[in-house]
Image 1 (cartoon, one colour):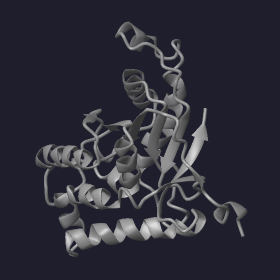
Image 2 (image 1 turned 120 degrees about the vertical axis):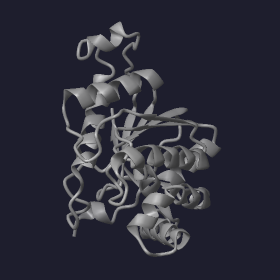
Image 3 (image 1 turned 180 degrees about the vertical axis):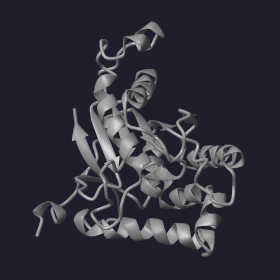
Image 4 (image 1 turned 90 degrees about the horizontal axis):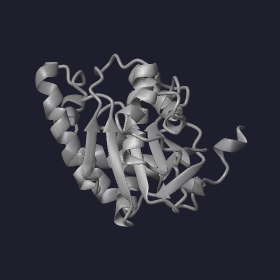
Length: 247
């Protein structure tokens, strides 16, 4: 047995004021870690969301020109439900996001712009714990975010950002990966769970296309099951888990 799979999860650091969450699509954070975000904003911390795409290829029955603005509106409402006021979209094409210099530059620019201590992203590995294949967009954005956390502090990697008035930011202390199969840290999900459910419910058009279940029952069941699954490793408390990389 993998010892890491049974060891107790440590509490996430709390000596920070500003976080930046960078993911590929609308709903990625709501499925991944919004109960933690709600707890953080309740504690007076500032969290900003940056999304690589508008999720325009996510609903088969809607063409991208219609779907993109709809999912953008749903994401802004979803973020507001957990106390996040700033949501930015980088404009990469949904479904075909490519890891590379352009994506790293866009994320490094966002890090320089918002100057976070904590950066959050989603599982960047090929699979979800070896049982389901991850999407290329998640892999590309997750990997690029890990790299951009360092890029943002090096003035010689993207000097054009400095020319645009975005000074280097070397203040990222951690990158936290939500949805990791090998988590190391956690946040108690209980205080933020109801708002997390409301936040995921704001993606109603996407959820109604995804399942025939009652949307609220679906959202509540998904989020509470994931949180309870982590409880054994977090002192019996339902939790949102992260794999934490220090810098």
